[in-house]
Image (cartoon, rainbow, N blue to C red; front, side):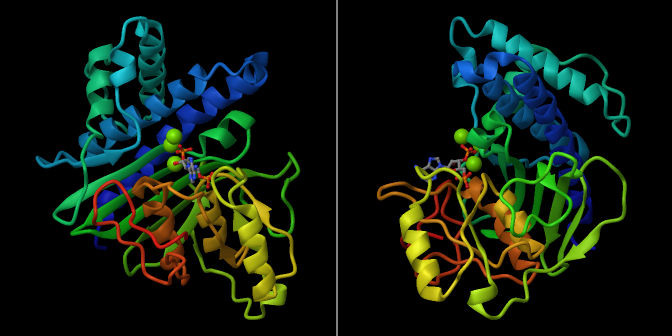
Length: 326
Ligand SMILES: Nc1ncnc2c1ncn2[C@@H]1O[C@H](COP(=O)(O)O)[C@@H](OP(=O)(O)O)[C@H]1O
Ligand SMILES: [Mg+2]
Ligand SMILES: [Mg+2]
Ligand SMILES: [Mg+2]
């Protein structure tokens, strides 16, 4: 299969990064620190996830040319007073890598400098030529902090086109979320969605080796039977505008609001039929917020465009040039 080796590496990297995030999110929920608005735990998970993916991809693919466009960089970690947080990230990454039995044994424990370097591999600008990995180490940080949805989102661009995407969604129920905003806690959670160009979209449980299943977008034709997704955060997308558009389309169901590219994952298996996103004026969308999600949806039979109906162009660097919304 085309991109088979890249897909294996990407699935492994995203799953392992998700494991790191789950560990941090658990601690975040169990301790009472969560409400204290101390953002350091999430920073730890964002950085740790980015380091894990960067290290894994490089180790598994050992290509001379490795380009990664990723959300985080190490600038803040290099500042005075960041030593403690950097050591925590380093420990998290080492502990996470040590749990991966499929990995070649690690020659030595990674140092703080190794971690800084791994994070900074993600400073590529992308663009229309060659291969670029695109990573959002935690998409939906606000959801992550709330204990809600988030995703590790990893994609691959080749000559400006998305050819591969992986979405690890640790809190997304394996069963459909159609019709309910809050799933019961007994639901089995943790989904891994993946797609390569021309080969469809698959979903498998994040923490087991169960067989992947091919997924397809909703087949609902009548808008009256459709439901739509949007950001949980009103600051990220104009809820009033989505509602009025949904209304005009004839959609009757209330919006399903969830964080992150888990929306694209849920869409790809038909939990809902539509995703509407209208950022406030002046906001520029970043490619890592959509690359993986876009291919997961298109390979499942869906269509992803800007609000003007044009396909998303991921070849312009870090930002998407959009007409109004997605
Ligand atoms: N004002 C804004 N308008 C639109 N999107 C925004 C935003 N501020 C942040 N975002 C983006 O929205 C993403 C989350 O998407 P969603 O709203 O679907 O959960 C964030 O990703 P991160 O959490 O990776 O920073 C961030 O990139
Ligand atoms: Mg994001
Ligand atoms: Mg992020
Ligand atoms: Mg962010």
